[in-house]
Length: 78
Image (cartoon, rainbow, N blue to C red; front, side):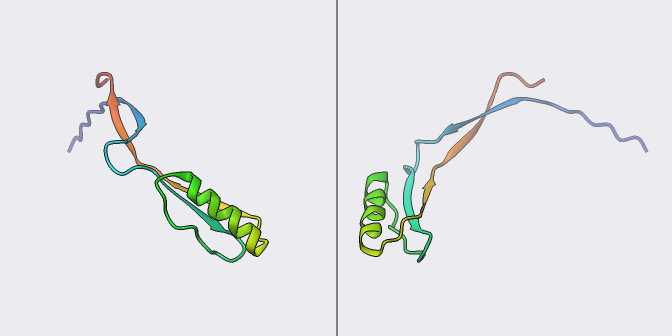
């Protein structure tokens, strides 16, 4: 039995997909695990972190950014 394979190659590119949901921003306190909540703009999440730092004295935060990307084939199949 002979198995033959055909390989086709194409280049791909990743692009930010703005056709659907916008990016989501959130901040998480690394000391107490409190979270800012999700926002479509980074400013409210950042403001929450600054207020939390002032109230609680916690100074380390993780920024969470959820964005969507689409892979698109470019060029011809080789």
